[in-house]
Image (cartoon, rainbow, N blue to C red; front, side):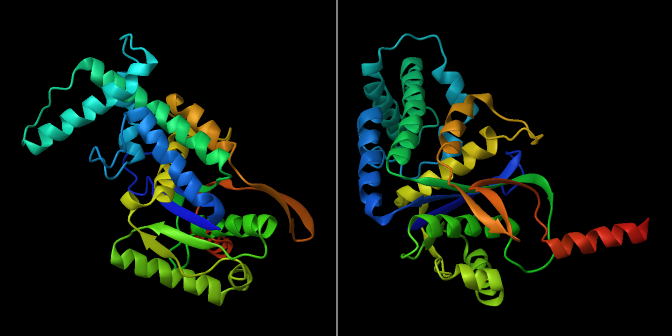
Length: 306
């Protein structure tokens, strides 16, 4: 099994939550999944996005607020015309870029057609992922969550790997799981590898989970990898559109339908926790990134100061 991982909101500027999201795909389903998404590109845009020079498709661009405003304009367009309008808009934007122009000749009708095609495409992609057995795992973190000062694998990463282990344990215990991250700058990649090694080699739980998870990650270019595109979509949509009743963060209601699709692609299982059954869900909300020892230490210091 392959787990493609991406993150969103870590800069704490544009999103109310930080999200580390993974999409798990069985190897036998991966190529059919890729082909189906490529077919959806042609269906919604009249061509493959790479041919239209959209080499890196990012959720924050596709699903920005302006996209919904443009799609909602009161312009009557038959559904069958949307792909040709979307393709025309992209071609005109490409031509303007090549000519060094700051503005293109894209019409309001083309912009609306393109925006509607984008929103339909995202819904289709999520449906395709569900049909191919993709499971969504994610740590959704409060932007103000307390952090640990120690050089440890972050709690949101540990939770993601824990749920990946449970998925492997329950669905394919005779096979190993690989972890594939969107490419990071070299120093961050090295730090992540060091923390993963310390967790999987230096802790009891990590050593146990390394029986199913290969502890050394792979890094790939997001513009070349469909799995990372799906993880990017999941991270952005969950960060803005997925909420538990206890979560105080604002949400974008226009993303709720997409978030609902991702919510339904969760993995659920029951595990033994200190002798008692515990229900586990693969999308989890965290409002504190400190481990148990860090929390106890911090609370002790606060009591001393009082």
